[in-house]
Image 1: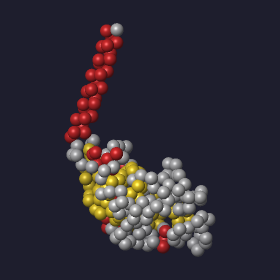
Image 2: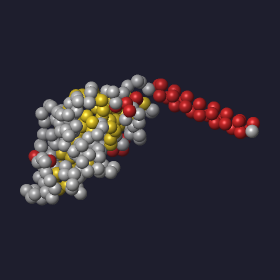
Image 3: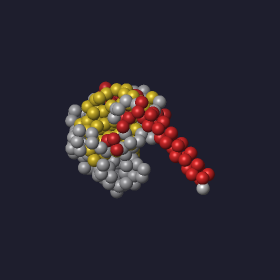
Image 4: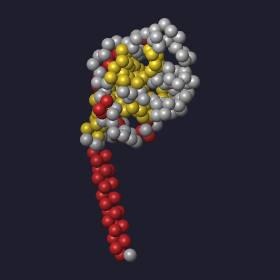
Length: 237
């Protein structure tokens, strides 16, 4: 019995020491937003987008990199344009909200313009390139090409990607509603160039110079994450 208590005592001492070391590491990091997030997984690059409130149509975007155990600022804050109906943890197709949460960046970047030198695989957009918004289609929330000028085999609610030469000059795909793809939960959430300087249909947009800077900075080897939320909720993601 005494031996059992001794083992238990050792375990408790070890746990307390380990917890203290973890707390000490956390305490050494600046009390910035990035260092207060619930989890960033294995990411060593991070984008945060903070809206003042759920119905806000813009937010503050910052870039961060991991240095040891801590996140340090790289660039920003920049004004990012969000969905015209704000941000939502329960996004639905066509609701014009930007999804809230923590997401990765998909493995291919796209653009009407030539590859500006990104570190990701790059697809130059041409006539017939679509991001499928039809929740009934097997191609939902995926890139799909059809022959230019032909009718796509899915319901369309917008023009093909090549018809948006400003917004889609360069873009990264936010990895929302993909694991698994749930019909109706929203599609085509991009980080792209702002065409109007106003709200989007659900994407995150920046000026051309800012969007290009982000895309050139992102490195797939860093497993980058983008975390989107309101000032009151983002720390929970």
